[in-house]
Image 1 (cartoon, rainbow, N blue to C red):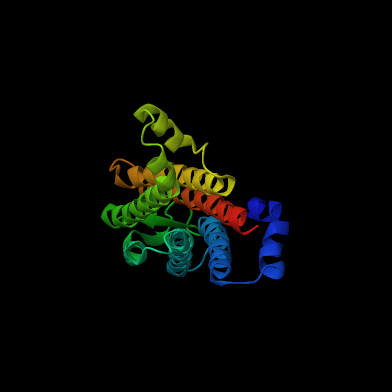
Image 2 (image 1 turned 90 degrees about the horizontal axis):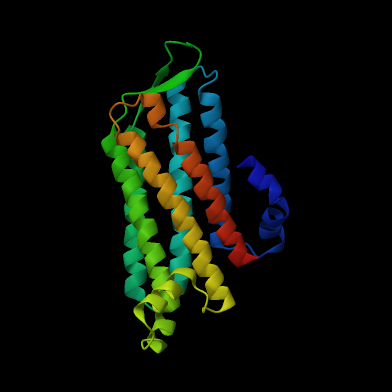
Length: 243
């Protein structure tokens, strides 16, 4: 994540200092900073922390802020596309609220303690897979609904005019977005990439939580990767639209 920020530092500075700062830009900045905070504290968590409980609290707090910020960015994206459909906006707002509410359960997923092998290091124990399943599941449902809704909206006009085409050809066009205008095709493919990364990493993290034979430390080992990858792609998608 640090490499990604430095690699796109020029774009990051342009968003903050050269563009007019609006609410989505504020959410974007919060998402970036919270991801950095999560990764940095999570890295030092297993090295040398005196108060494991406090370190765990900050890890979960940054995690919750990050996933809700990313979800909010895509909610704002979908709301802009459905600007003339108030009911759809309300439905998506309810879904985002569900994501926010379920994310609070992450405070109860695991407990922290000093490692028996390395007393100065902290570790996770007493993992509660149910809470993680609810939290990650709600986020995956939200991402799926937003992706399908935006894709449907972008293709709605095209499919109306191309009803005479074979189903296979229409399906191929629906998957690659070749016939969409340039900007709409960019929106579609960016969303497609984010959803693919979110689905793969989120599903992997979910499976690792529910496998009973895994040690608690290994159950949570994939979460930093999930958070980092989705943050990088989501912020890249946001920059593509803004810049």
